[in-house]
Image (cartoon, rainbow, N blue to C red; front, side, top):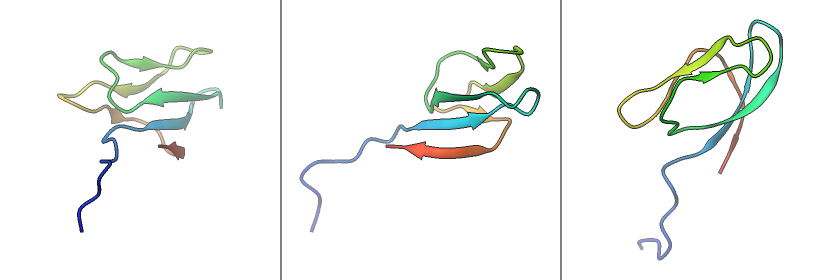
Length: 62
């Protein structure tokens, strides 16, 4: 049986900066580089449709 309401293909991720330990939320389809708000370390780079993470995901939010 198919679902009547499709689930979104994008998510929000909770990432931890490897440089300073700051945690921040990031959209999985961000259109620009994602940098840490505290130390300016790059956390993710852009790709065609999704971001390429450069750190570990702490939590996924639907």
